[in-house]
Amino acid sequence: MSVAQRPPLPRVPALAVLAHYLTGYRRTWRAGVFSSFLLPTLTVVGFGLGVGAYVDQGVDGVRYLDWIVPGLLASTALQVTIGESTWPVFSNFQWIKTYSAQTAAPLRIRDILAGHLAFVLFRALTASVAFLLVTALFGALRSGWAVATLPVVALLCLAVAAPTFAYAAVVDSDSWLAMLFRFAVIPMTLFAGIFFPVESLPGVLRWLAYATPLWHAVDLCRAATLGVAPQWSVAGHLLYLAAWALGGWLLAARLFRRRLVV
View 1 (cartoon, one colour):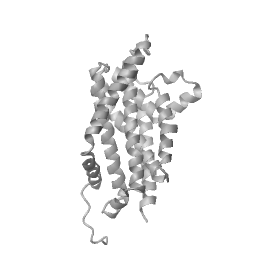
View 2 (cartoon, rainbow, N blue to C red; view 1 turned 45 degrees about the horizontal axis):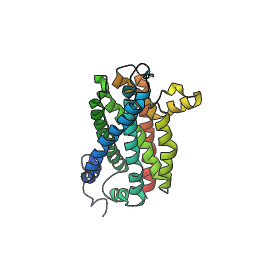
View 3 (spheres, rainbow, N blue to C red; view 1 turned 120 degrees about the vertical axis):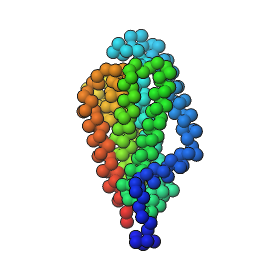
View 4 (cartoon, rainbow, N blue to C red; view 1 turned 135 degrees about the vertical axis):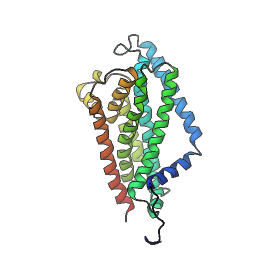
């Protein structure tokens, strides 16, 4: 079909891409909802109540359960984001060729990228809402500002998903995706201030933790759920996460175009 014969573009083409993923999600959402409630419940019980029972003094004068919950919230959003931004993206390039089919339709690279990122954002936000509901039942949210964690989680999702899309677009084997989890996601989860204060780390590791987008989201979420000021400025945190998101978008758009436009 020639360009002249193609049907006109939808008014918001990225929404058509989002609708594609939501249509598929309609068949699998039950398993996602189950895991979204089960995982935070087990995590809160295991770490917040189990480990917290041995932390008599709490952390910074705060009960350990209340202190750890915002970090677990950000970590849960990170795990969902990475899960939706690795194998699904790689599969769309290498196995089921969804992106190639979409470029054959009247869709631009930015529409394909924006629509898929919007779906990842949807998944991270719904998982975060489920996490907040579960932790609220445990009485672990000490401030009404806890709802402010949702836009923070959304920005964290974009800051992580966009560069991960770029990574998944350039690797030639799914073994590289497993390495991403092993050498980036797991260390970031362990040392980004989720389970203990970053200040207890040696100087070099502390600054590596500060360099991760997860720590900035954890600090903002903790400030919101506890009703205290963050360690760094709110504007500094947000600008840093936005820089990751923008840089990741530009890199992903470039690599997607290189892979899909002949």
